[in-house]
Length: 450
Image (cartoon, rainbow, N blue to C red):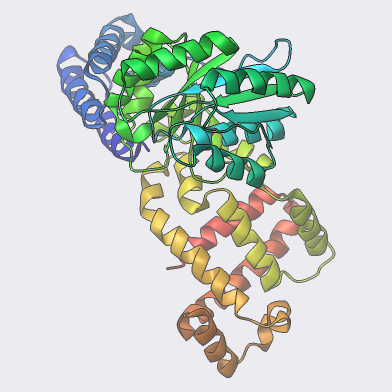
């Protein structure tokens, strides 16, 4: 999401990193570049002005002049101010109430409320071991209730039935009663959106809020809307006592303006960020980690957390035992590792979170998608015996595999060569151990697959 902003700020701040002394003159030029970078990222003008003023005030004060490395001190100031703009610390949901705790989602049509309801339910079930139910009070959009029912079923989330001939507040009351009967910990209420903010919509959702008295009222906003997101958020905040924000479509071609504007405009924290279409594509929002990624310093903590939740521990354990026993790393194992990388968002996602690698993430995105699909197709075109014994794959077999996978013989050769390299690496890593090392090694091998 922050690719362009990261690139601009990294270049700008790099010019100061080696300075022995920072003067008001050389800071002015840098601040001008920072201002332009933020405006190009579609950050709201009042936010840009306050941000630059704060950085300037700190930079020309004692803080930098007393530092042994003024360039690094300036970078730290920018980092601190980015964190301040986005909310200082991660803000979780406040669910310590008499169950069911009610979470109300509000926002414009198309912002992603329905998918966010299911993603949030899945998050609470898998991370916090909560029993969660979802309900739709959207009686206007065709198939809105059906959509939530389908998504909830696919994600294994309890769904409360409703119909378009009911009133939204009646649906909400019935859902609260049903959630209580089923001893649910949390009830997530999906509401109707409109294409634009209007009085009728605001009056309805305000009345709905009064009916269910939610513990959390989350504003769902599309990151692609840039600073318009901040304006819409303010309109909702004027009517509803918002407790936080869910930023959706953060994996798209967004410039980051929404993330840097919404918190400042509404005064409410961004609590979650949706980073894909899958049900588990929801991350807690950590301002310090996002600031680090914006400045190209990576986000290793989030990478570790992703590995914890998204790596299949059973498969990882089986592979570790197999390698430890001296058995060969075959093409079935190689395919498993490719799928594990896919689950973690591919090379682009990993590079985005690695220190100093953020700018390369976008460049590797197309490569990673194409590479994963192609490599899996090649392995899937092999017989079980060929996967177990790659050395048995002769020229005629390579031609057959290439034809079956829609690739060229040289693609099959390249995959077999990379498998050999991985096999050697696994042998070396068996003593050092660790799935993290395996994943890092795989990422290195995939970098050359085009």
